[in-house]
Length: 86
Image 1 (tube, rainbow, N blue to C red):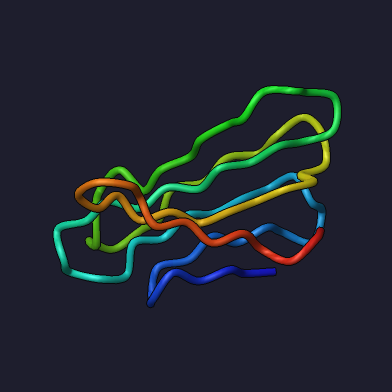
Image 2 (tube, one colour; image 1 turned 45 degrees about the horizontal axis):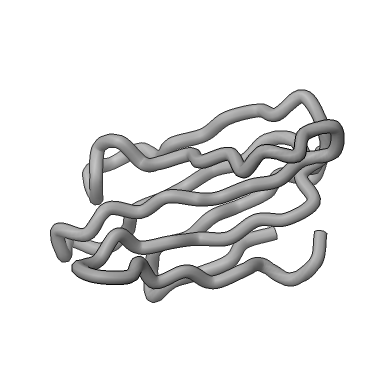
C-alpha cells in the first residue's frame, strides 16, 4: 500500500511491518514517513536520507503498522497526508 505527497511516497509492505519512504522530487524538500505500530504508543519517523537520489529509506518494525503518513519537509508547517486505514 502506498500513500503519495506529490510524487513522493510512503509504502507499507504486505507483511504490515516493512515500510519504505521515497523522495521522488528534485525540489530540495526532504521526505519522511510517520508510523505507529502495534505494541508501541510512540510515533516513529523514517526518512529518505539521500534526497531524490536513487534509493529509498526503509525499516522493518517489530509490530504491524497501524497508522502511516507521508510528509514533505517544507518551510513552515510540513505537508503530510495519511494513508487509508491499514
